[in-house]
Image (cartoon, rainbow, N blue to C red; front, side):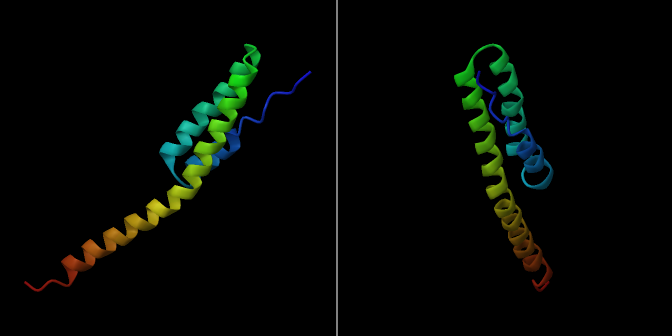
Length: 87
């Protein structure tokens, strides 16, 4: 008897809380489908959903900090431009 795949729900939650909310939410949705698909007998679909949940969480963990740093750099440049312009 096969065991269901790890649904990667923990990674989705951590990604949502710590990194990137949109990617984390998609990861949580995919992770919730894993057990449902397994119980319905769609083992291949369960493995695909688990893989998709892991991938969304990883992309969120990688892109989240990059986007946050980019936001702060753009914000600082705009704020510094406003602050140091002569009137």
